[in-house]
Length: 231
Image (cartoon, rainbow, N blue to C red; front, side, top):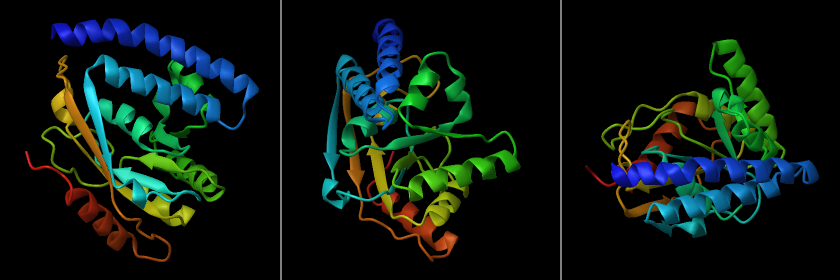
């Protein structure tokens, strides 16, 4: 618990500082690259200060060009940092709309080109999905967690349909990824931090265009589960 509290003393001011840098950088760069660079810098140092080692495999499955949707399991808070460092290309997050209301941090997310998803009601969610699909189809790669929330015990939760509706509308390949070790580093709803390793493994692309939603969902789930360590 002491380690976690000391980490928070670093995290809060560091996050504010990097968020300010992203906002200022975004004033001169409309591409989102400066914001993305700030996010990678933030994540790299958050991992280092938490004494977390990152291991990445399967990068040969990540195409060098063209928009894709990265989908994978969600184990803990450090998933964000691990993926920000692991994915070698510019990408955006599809994140819940509430995060964009956080002072400074939310502005930094907008400057980086991240996509808000309003889940307050069905109509707004569909509108958000349509806007996100248009962004993806125009060339923006995104990361989304189809479970919708963090797991409690490491097992895969049921997938939400929204992620796969988005893939169908965008018509771009899905790159499945599997995260292991994140839950052990920082258990859900506990002020606890344990040094160690987080691994991110990418699987072969899955084509969602013209394929039934249920079939795509099953393929993605199997690809993620194949590399998931049993707890």
